Image (tube, rainbow, N blue to C red; front, side):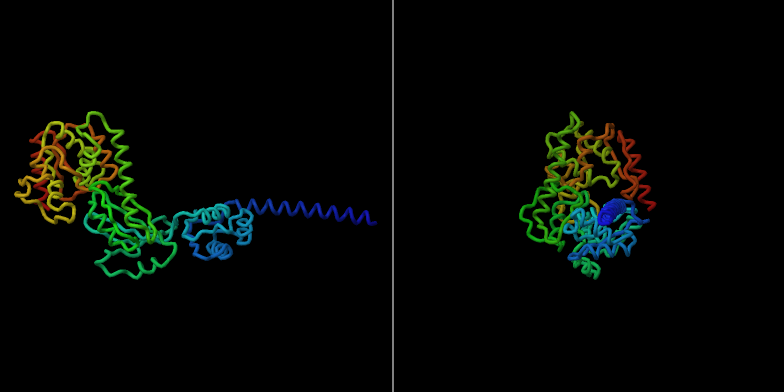
Length: 384
């Protein structure tokens, strides 16, 4: 009898082990299976929260089928203690395993609220925007000029959130003075700027920052980025360019940057200036004259006077031979590439097609062609 009972008990135990093993395999399969989300969502993990609260939020948003299984899976993978605060974009049909990886790997938030400090040619703006996970497009919540406009309540609110992301967006063609003054005004940063790099040596780009980041450290980062871009461009430059050094590349690139607002024209504009340098012709470009007047520290806000075009200054390329003594702005990567890889043309003239910079320029190889283009521009100017 006892032998029969022991045999049944062993059989039951084996069945239970198999059932438990099957349950574990099922759980693992479910944890890694495609999730129920039909559209991606933005999951906010608040500072100080725990996996239980996150799992309930995921259930409420329809991202997972079982909060219990999600918690057990994170425990099994030893991820519970690795939960990171932030706002994370959870793609459609993400598995529980994939979601756990998203919220524990750290790094910058991938959705939610973003504050963008834009350093522009004419003015600097602060933009508060939020990612709409349904469309993957940002929705503007506030836009203002710091120090001029009243600070929106939305800006104050998001500054108090721990998962708000911050970015400095530096436009191509701004001057070093403009960058320094903008960074001084942006209240997300701290510290003094004690070493200002030469004109042209800051790389226009987007820079992720955190509240309290040091201004000088950011300037150094911008300078390091530009040095690498310039060094690579100089190393891979076209042969027989009439440019003697990386510094001259930077000067030409800054002129290209200021001469056209149409990105696809950069290489044609570069060809005009390279052809002129090869022929010993003066560059005759207005932006250099303007820089000689403003030193890059203000917007001229008017047309150039004839007296200014005739006055001999180091930056007046209507008077001096060759390049001016230094860059006139901070050129972007594409303008630097255009300077070292100009398009192969015979162009030596160009003029705007209309008063709208986005309409581009008309290029010419002879003075007669150029004069005809100028007449068309004057006609467009008169009609407008």
